[in-house]
Image (cartoon, rainbow, N blue to C red; front, top):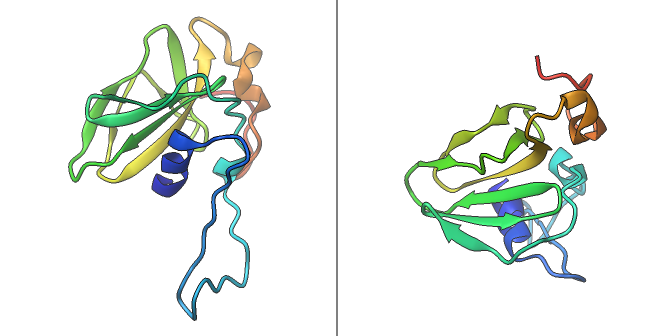
Length: 135
């Protein structure tokens, strides 16, 4: 997640992420890795990256990308005008603690919106069954 989120901080049209393993020779990768995070509906970039509370952020149409490059955990308060949902764990956050050298993709849910009427129900089923509810 750290590498992918770091890439999303600087992503530009026409750019892509190259991932390779050097276990058995230079850039050898028998299977192309595909992770659920690649399918999240984050939308298009709305801003350049910015530094806040010791972490890097970048806002997308439907998401906020957060990267903690530090060697220590960082407690982050996210924008109170929206609810933020972790696209993989489906947890809702108003604040979170990011471990050292980590990244998160938080999907925006409008404040006060029912999860049944939000982008939560449109999330791809990346790691198993999800019925659109949070509880």
